[in-house]
Length: 252
Image 1 (cartoon, one colour):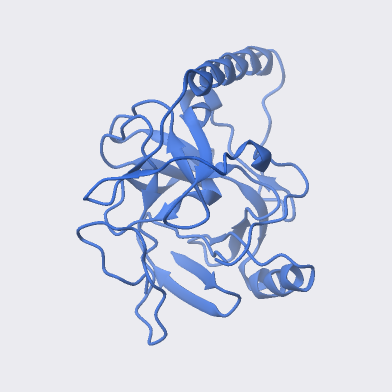
Image 2 (image 1 turned 60 degrees about the vertical axis):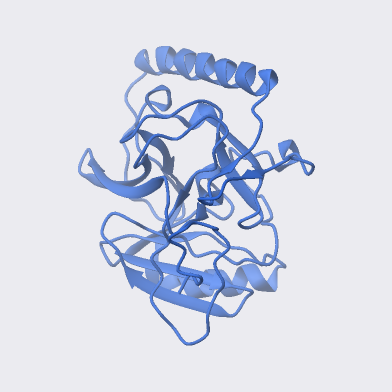
C-alpha cells in the first residue's frame, strides 16, 4: 500500500505498509479549508493545556461542554440515520473528483467523540472525548477521490496557491488516492507515534475499499490519537517528536 509524506515543501517518501496508510503531510503551515468539510478550525483552543506522560502519551482536559457536544453530535447522527432509512440507499462509486465515503453509519463509529486541539507532536491533533475500547472503528478517512498519478500535480497546484500542507492517501489498488486536503474530516489531523494507539485498516464495503482509523488498544478519555506513519528510511531525516519510549527518533 503506497504512502506519501511531505515535510516543509521538500520531503517526499513512499512506503508499503499492510493496513497502515500514512497521509502525505506538509508540516509547515495550516491547511486552507475549502469545499465540503466537517472541520471547524475556529473551534481549536490555542491555549489548550497538554499533559505528556513519560511514555509519550498526550492528554488534554475534557470539559463538560465537550461531553455535551459529543452527546448532541451522537443524537444528530441517530436522527440522520432515521431519515436515511426512509430514503433510497446511496450508491457509492469510485467517481473521480468527488467525495469518496462509504455508507457506514456514523453512529456506529466514534467520530462524534473526537476533539480537534493543538498538539505538541505537530500542529493540531485529535483527542478522544470518551474512553475507546480496543479494535473499535473510530473514523473513516474520507476525501476527494483522485488518480495517484495526479498527486504531484495536485501538490504543485496547492503550493502555487499558498497551501503548504496537504493530506493524500494512496490506495493499494495502485491507481487511486484520497485527497483530504480540502474535503474531509478530522482524521487527517491524526499525528504519528512510534508507539501508537491506532492503526489504519482497509475494509471492503459493497465491493469497494475504504480506510478506517481503528483503535489498537484502550484509549483513555482525553488521550491523543496516533498511528505509525511507517515511512521508509532515507538520508535526509525528519525528526520525530512523539516522545514514546520506543521512539525511533526520526519518522524516516
